[in-house]
Image (cartoon, rainbow, N blue to C red; front, side, top):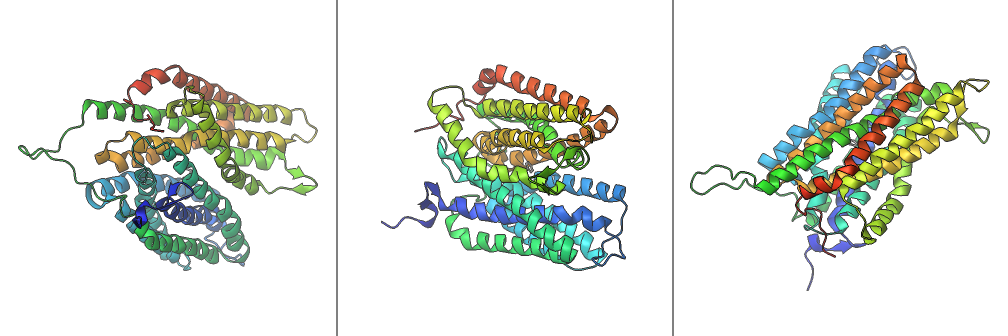
Length: 445
Ligand code: PHE
């Protein structure tokens, strides 16, 4: 018999996964591409050949900070909209249209268009990002061991977008014209939206609106069961580690970016590597290491050792901590070298550890949320995850600021100690916390 389109698989995964993969790849391409040139456009002089808005650095950084925070904060109402009204699939569609409009309007050279574009992008990401992630989970049945691998594949898509966009959009925007750059990001989003619309036939069973179950007599929403409540508690606790992790990881865009620019000898094989290139390195590592790391975790699970999501998150936090050990070594080296600069290999090694940590936390957390959240709060919990990650970004900014007075070495050692202690704490309590999940992670082989 002919299988229904949504049940067809490709390389062992539902075809819908690849639709969500490409939609999110293009959404991230547009997001990271636009973000890569935003601050440059704001600060470029109005008299330049490729004229910008002529803002000073402080105002530009301020807008950038607000913008990146709002983008993820809006995930909470975006999640609620899906849970209460539209379901995830339609909310993603809506988000996609808002994003297309937002990005395209940025291609026009007017201040009104600029602000309107930003507002639409913030709303669009809020509607799309959490809900598309929840939909990935919806493709797998409870207990399907493939779910975690599905999320790794999805995460690789995110990072193909994140890796290529700053290079391509960055080049077009910076060298040719800012608005061409914005337009190119818009074109990416249009492609994403076309894939999503075309792929609806593979998504018929996922992301549909589920009405809240009501008690027949009282007509009140049925409250959560004790098991569901326990699971919510574990989720909320796991959000603490998520915030710590992103607080460390996102030093990459701020403090470490400046550190690389000022204190790292970026000459490799006679060529000077641009600072921004190091930013693309992490996404590149995700793309090449995603599959090997997923494989390693699967092998580890097969040996019967502890391999729950919370355990992986603990390990990921410890690993990123050790990334800061390498950075601390680099900071020490700057005080003894002749030119006050440290070798770039410390930085590359650190980013490698950052990404091994990221792959043990970020796709794992997305998958974990889809296993644990009660259905009526599925998207809201995902939205909260993005909110918490946004707060982690803010925390990273504060740590970066603190480094301006405390010095990099002290901060790097501080982050190392903090991350390793937090990770160990989680691992010590992992068995107790896992009890509260009531077997949500059990897999049927
Ligand atoms: N690479 C991730 C992404 O773009 C980074 C991220 C993590 C963003 C958590 C938001 C929240 O999806």
